[in-house]
Length: 161
Image (cartoon, rainbow, N blue to C red; front, top):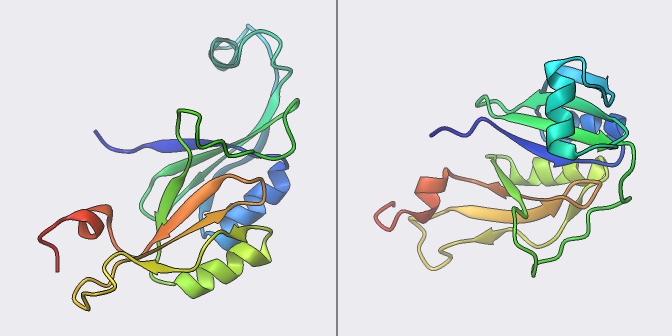
């Protein structure tokens, strides 16, 4: 298996595209596109199957990370204003991006309406040979994400140094 893409619900498509491109450095593949509820096309039928009858339409944009992972942004016509994180609820609660530029990426996150949830943390502060760092943040709509300084494998492998 390879990771292909992740879908994220946002409250304002223009603000979301600006945040994910300017703050996080993603590239636009397909900019803000309107999708309506209809049964004439395969996409229309797929959306009804996924969102149910009466979803009222949405805007979608497709972005991509520098390593080719897709990020689909969805702005539903009817939605709550902000994502409320409920850690007692099952399901995906964050995604993670890897960066060498923690300070710059954090500054851009705040500049474009995001929020930093914690100080930068080292996974192994007692071991200078293991410099892996991480931090949790939010996009402007309350969606949680992380920054890692190293690959997932380098961060968690017991024999990595």
